[in-house]
Amino acid sequence: MTEIQAVARKWGDSLAIIIPNDVVKAHNIKPQDKITVIIPKMIDLSDLAGKFSTKKTAQQIKDEMRSGW
Image 1 (cartoon, rainbow, N blue to C red):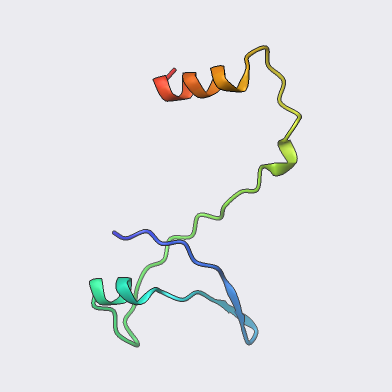
Image 2: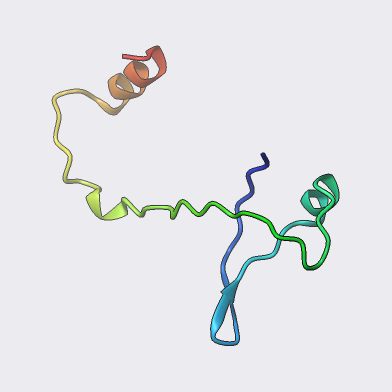
């Protein structure tokens, strides 16, 4: 399985993504081939900035994340 990031672009009344050429070659994808695309939408969490309060510093939180809690 190959994971790529792509930007959806307007194509008529639809949206389209472009599969990079190296992925096309690696998987031998040809026109009219059926492929499965799994779409996990990226969630924008920027509106949460400043709403999280804790007594720990950002460095302490990062250190805990790195250590696996």
